[in-house]
Image (tube, rainbow, N blue to C red; front, top):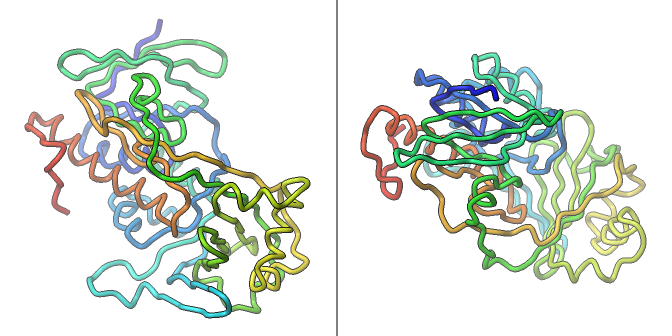
Length: 339
């Protein structure tokens, strides 16, 4: 079978994988990325935090992202029983980015991946990792299979697993462990947003605290589309009957602010759900690999944290990987690279 050589194999072409791959590539190492699905592909996690910008800037992605004219996000609005609290990122105690974006993730992720390829890093889409064998020195031989069923090998000195929901290394090596977090469910869709101007809210995410353990996200995009989702314990949704659209519309009707905000809105796709997705892992790194982003632990959508955790963890992992490839002794527990 065909065998490719790389210094670093990155599994996953989402934000975590592309940021890590770019930083390692810029350090002069040969990087190969494999991704199980074709891009663009839908995923949630559409509202970023300013801390993302440092990682995206170091990876060289900002110019390409700015060209997409995404909705600038300057803060967050929290609503509970008619009370409103606005928070703006410019009201900060330490120096840092004062804005970020709200992004349709299918487009956002593809821009990152396309930009990475323009930097000279190859990505093999619709390519699944089926086996990994690690050597004593941490090098590895990975077996991959393309969409036509053809198998090949990738020999690498190190692996960065940014496979997200795929959780490649934890699943292959039995590292998955139950999360201590309670089960959660999200029901969400995109809407054609004709009511947006009534709240003058496009420049920030709105979080509606509906009741105990139930909250709602409202994320406007620059395209005139808004992302809407309910997050709660699964029991909250049991009182709503019918199709997923009927359930989501019934949930909307229970929250006065959301009911008025989303009055007569058209759903652009049948609402989708995620449920009981939290899971953790026994190890975050090992001899020859490191896990980044959602591979480390799934969380329910928590106020825009997902992409931030993905790109920041991959940024740190990339720097430690570079040091190890240069022959340094790296303490993965204690060493945090200086920026």
